[in-house]
Image (cartoon, rainbow, N blue to C red; front, side, top):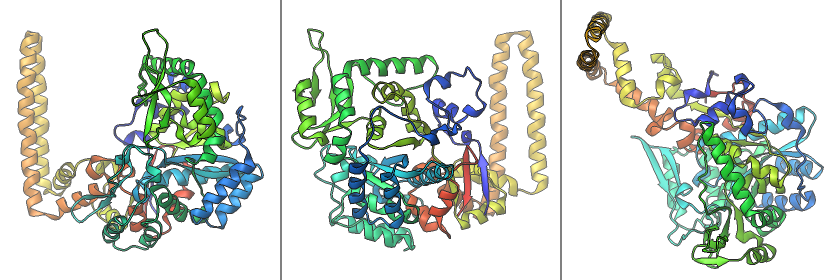
Length: 541
């Protein structure tokens, strides 16, 4: 099996904050990035666990998780890990929104990383179990009701419909009879691969987005003992109530801490992942109509701040009463969620992607205020998976991942240029090099005479270079007409590895790669989840 390792910077559009965090191994001691995180992704001390000020009730926790595991059709390995958790094991936690059919590939990469990190920590003498936190309380339906699969001529987006959705938490939405047609579409696109059997078993009309996702993910990693949690229930919210209570009672000081941290990030040249407005809080409230609304604290004429969700006003006492009687109605936002999560679970480390790693820079002051210490954040496995047919084409043209991270037109031009007769390549290269050298001499001479004349010369020279490049494209297009298979190869490579100009792991469904794999993909990802390569990996599947 071919395994390639690239620096994480091979991927486009990475935030500076995440990029520098993943490069901490070589960062200087006074690098600004160090002040925003509790540890480095290369620091193994997380395996010893932290001792936050809030400790979970293990019996209640495991009893509740066990009931959910039964509902998710978990296997023996999961129940064995629940026993370990009951006996004092700690957790490596990750999570994701409950995307249709398991969501994009990055969902599998997160789960595999958490599993492998838990294994490594256990082998080091400190028992750990992997936990996957389903973000079922989010209310943005468009982020979870669709999935991207490969069709004959491009990426096809399948969608489930929920006509009556009005800002309710998405996890509770029932799939209904309409899901059967969407499953049938997926089966056809996936060529009825064995994984579609699990799809049919888990995405049924009687299931919700949360239960289907939980069953599917549990099934994919059945042999690895992954524990899946839906923390939207009253029981889990009661366990995390101290965090929600603190966020209500100390809303103003937490807001100051978060806005101060945002200013610090900005002054260091980083951007905040979560936008914090003047009236923002860390909480959401499910109102009497079942809609999940952000709680805000706008200033009144008196200068005081009042709680508001939608058009309804609440006092602090009213919110505390809701927390006491119906804790499931209050939920954390993205910045508070890691703290809420770690009040429920005995977390040693959280495995996240670029966005979540950025959250951790913002929410460290909240961690320290409520739990006393911030949980270490570990980057998930980042990978591009190459199906056998695509590997054959790439090898034929001697292409690497870097070659594939372009548009199909760009790759077609590159393949055509390579395929041109050697005599033509030499003539075009010689003409281009000679033209460029002569133009540089002319530009220098004219700039020496007059700076403005030099600028005009530069503009004219660039027009000539453009025409030279046009000659190259004309020759390449002629070659493409003679060898039409080159464009087909470029289309296939970019469609699989860089679909729609988006990195594969962020767009294509994990189930797509499970269907294309010729082996045990879940096991392959777990085996490589320790990330001997700290950047981006390429696997043949």
